[in-house]
Image (cartoon, rainbow, N blue to C red; front, side):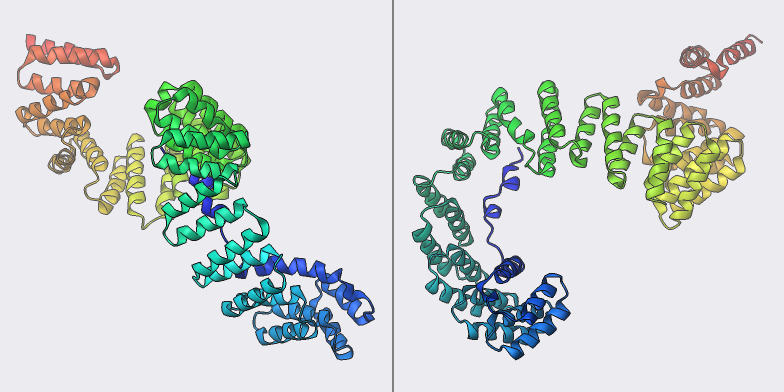
Length: 579
């Protein structure tokens, strides 16, 4: 079973320590608000207030000019220097100027928390983490009550691979805030980074005694589940649910154990909260459902329950393409093609610019042989994704099935024009063009396209077979036809169609006894279902003077398909025998 819980609620990712350099962006907004509301506004000049106004209007050029006027007229205005640093920091090439203004602001007000804090982050942003840690350590001494500083310091230490300092700093946080979930998860992360997984879970279990949260309980439940200690695992899951009745990860963990123990009634009860939770990433649900659907035996045994899960997923994410696609596949696999087509049609309408949504709908129409419906859908896709080979190919097949021979010929020619160097596409398209032209009674044109296909792939069995068979019908180039047909039998010795063609040409070239052996082989591998093959076999038997057996096979052929004129053939052959 796919243990997807670790994808949608991974412990480490849930408390992943932010890269110090990324703190830079979020802090700018806070500092802008702080400075614009600070007490420094008291007694400020008109230039300063105008500069603030331009700055918040994103006119940094005018703001910079006015701040420069301000520091010229009032060189002790630390806030003006700070704004100049903020403006300069937007241009990564002006690092020296940015640092100069930061230092000026700190020089004027060395105890200002935000100036020093932002300077620390600026050092991180310019890859000088040693200076970042020094400044953060100074700030922790000056402002020991600010717990966020300690987490920033941990980030800085981790960026320098100093796990010991990070752990020591974490202990300082605990003395300030007491035991909290974030501290537990952070220490877990640090222990994992030291490859101390057992120590990490031993710590967590001890910590849980004084800091009970649903997340920690579920983590311990998962840990014991991996150790196959189901009793302890279920105990922790139940405690998590007792603390938070809607805590999805705990239900998922219980469901995982229920399914492993084949407690399917409990499994379906506990997996439902996970499937119905709109906060769970639908892609992750999709992975889970696909894994579930891969067991055909399981699905067949629990169709009503699986139906319910699939609808729950759809109702939780009614416009999600992944979920809709999986639901469509499920309906198709369980013999509800109409529902499958409906859901995939809606999915394409919801995502008109999605090729995958449109093409999946097209494929299902193809599998359900809805030939007329395919054409407009294919045209819609080609309007958005012109010259797509797969779509054109499905359109060409559908046109052929709809007896739109000229349209099909146009589409197949389009394939060869778009992808002249794609040998697989050209072989397939030229093969189809050969068949289409032969159906129209244009044998020479058909052979021209067969030759093109064989030039790209001399061993392509479908073309070799059809080309050989049509030559045999016309009684032309039988030696060439026999050589081509022999290649198909060598490739697929149990293919009744290829065996029929080869045996028939052997018969036409005077090798009826050898042909009989190949026809007998074709009968074993499905030839008895084809009136044409049985008719050919009867002709061979008649030639070999096995008349009674020949008439038995002609009767069988007539029973399968009475449109081949076999009645007239039987009368003719019997009259010849009487003479």
